[in-house]
Length: 106
Image (tube, rainbow, N blue to C red):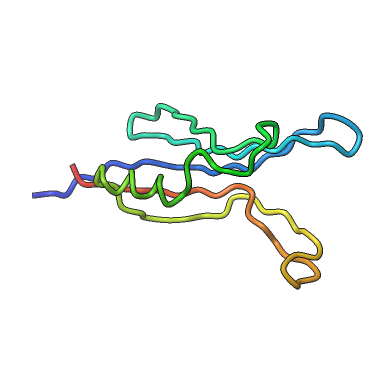
């Protein structure tokens, strides 16, 4: 018997939008593409909300997908930005877009 797999993609995006001189709003979002290709957008956080608390953490999302039978197949950093003076480093690259691909047998 041949094994058959279906795939799900999750993309994390951390985006900024300039709203004035030296002023930005920041958002974090998960884009989830199921086996049918349909997109589900999960808003995580926005600086406009006045809180630093995420609506869903990565761990919560991974646990939810695991309960549905999905297992991680790959992780890829799609985009990063170099910041200065972070955690003792003079320059450090920080991911701002990451893709995870999951699979499950059907």
